Image (tube, rainbow over all chains, first blue to last red; front, side):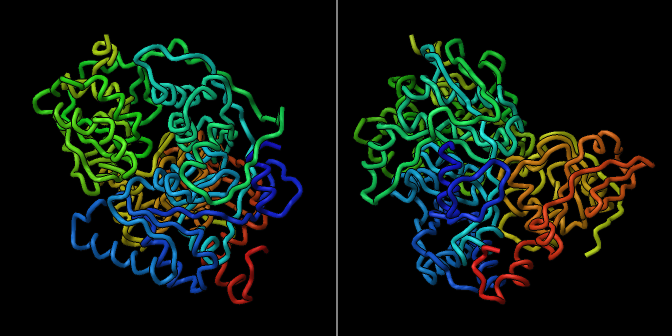
Length: 418
Length: 171
């Protein structure tokens, strides 16, 4: 069995499971954010009406609001806080960071566990060797909260083997964007993606993170990486809570095996309307942007701010461009402060925002007009997600975001990295 | 519940995402009627008008991709849609459809045969989609999922079968 099959077997009290079987598994962690927590709380209290079975396994992170933009939103957040207190679940309030980064930094997510959440990017926790999948509100309110369980169909697994070394100016995020285009939206519907290979092995954990992150956007149920020494050192540095590591058997059975080499890649940009619209940066170079952002699901990592600083140090962004800097957690901001990145990026013309999920879904950092465009490290570029459905959203690496902010238009970062 | 429905179709293409089905700013609601007013809003009022006159959504590959928001299924229920027939579904949407009592049927050939505005008949028990005198079959749902759909969704299902018995949801 592979890692996901072993975890699902253990969580459902079976010796083994086969792809296609439906199992009822014990859930170790339920992650909810401020867009889903309120709704789930209403269904749970008004329609289910049973006690919270395992409050210690339920985590609510307010990450789409770092402060509520309206009275109505403030009221919703307050009601959700009261719900958290009533049931004794974990609450991480506004200004602490993105749901998935916080969940990892605070040790809620540990290897070998079943992680579910209402955020569709929940599969990112496969990075640490978890079975992690996104579910809807009713599953949480009806099954996870009252019983600590959820039903799952055991997925078929595809090996995604990544080999090669990136050229200068090309980052793991470029490789992940490119891979999204290679697999295609819906190219892995219902599958588990087992990321393997020398390229991945050489990456640090926060760069590996970018690969299970794309699982949902190619239609997969989950993505995972077998834990190694790097994974374990990473987890031990953030938590002393115990965990039991699960790894795949040697030579597990795959439905398919896909191999990719990243050696010849150029910087990649995915332009609205979908992630599948990904091309080498040259295809979009010169298209004007007014907003640039380092943040969003999967963005706002220390690695992103380091990359941007490598380009922006001693330079000024173009007149008319606004550069949003949104750390994914308080820990990231503290580290950026220590490394001098806060000052470098501020002096270049950027503005720091509270740790959160940034301008994602136009909740509290304003919206784009139909005449505007943004380049960012966000995870999605769907029309209307950050304001007008006519606004363009370009996704790229932190290097590409920084280079584009300098130019006021989509730019190839390699021009600035001589 | 009757295992058959008949209705008029509205046809969409591949990779219809949840931001198009129900924009994120409306997610504070779980009321199907309230959500229904904003279903497919980004595609404009003409599409919304046709949606309201339809009972079946027909779509290409990967319908409902993107966010895990359950309201993408709820808003369709609210607007009067009974079933979605697609070439394939994003898996969270499929799960959310079952859990909200919306039929989600995978039948790629039927999708090719259906034009906008066509009348179709779907029989969940027989596993058939009929349009313009042609009949397409699909494997019927497993019993466990049929019971959730018959109850009208996961919460009504639990309320009827599991919670009254003080059950452990293992059934």
